[in-house]
Length: 191
Image (tube, one colour):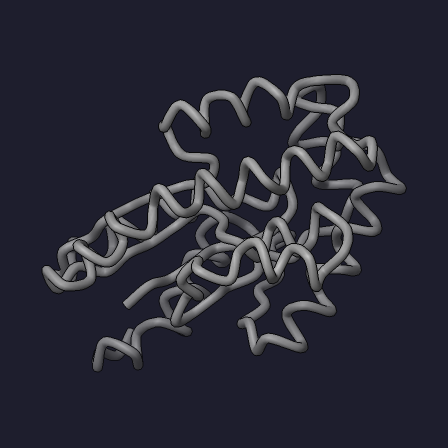
């Protein structure tokens, strides 16, 4: 099973992925954890480029989209091997982030057509004010207007793709409980 946590910066994805991994291991499952961008050379370049003042400009976004697609393809073999070995794959972001952060959905879908789609995607939905407070000073994607558009696109995508949506304004433990509530039936357990 391939599980993805999505959401704007500051929504708590990294914290929740860590808690999810711990819980899955506690219930006896093997876990393979990934994140985007990866630690590959392409991923390292992406992390550097995301800090550029030009990061939100349209032409720069095209370059980022292509690099994200390339970085994502590096992951596909590892994800396939992990699933074949019976591991639960959990990821902090997947190609859906490109659908939200970059423009031209058809083109983004096309350059990511070989990327595996998650079996379950959980969107950690957060108000933009809280996101800004949590991420202050981290990158150039941090402004009210941009994050408002990202939130709107995430919610539309969640509706169209059948994501589970969790209110990430709630406390860390409540969000974790909500994630477990969604996933527990998939593993045949009650919480």
